[in-house]
Length: 104
Image 1 (cartoon, rainbow, N blue to C red):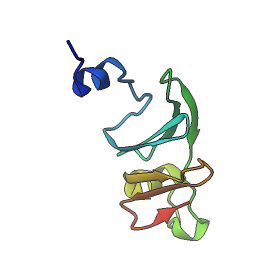
Image 2: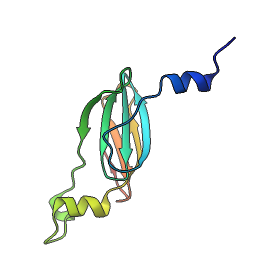
Image 3: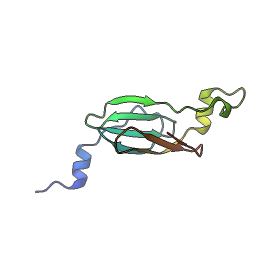
Image 4: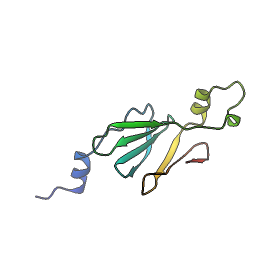
């Protein structure tokens, strides 16, 4: 009896945490899984264990943040990460979101 592709995927599924919002995108890189979320979080996970390796923080030029607005307020307003891609060698990561920019 052959195991179906779906069964293989389910048995090797990992939970992408600690996102606080809905996960909107993910991509596979060399030995890593990258996931983005509606809460502006972007995380790097180990592909074998699912263990969180690091949080990748989006950074905006100060000129983009309105006067009297905190960075947290700005992130809440501009926050959703909608797409993420990584280069084949794992050295370059791109994330795009509701701010209409691609961040490298």
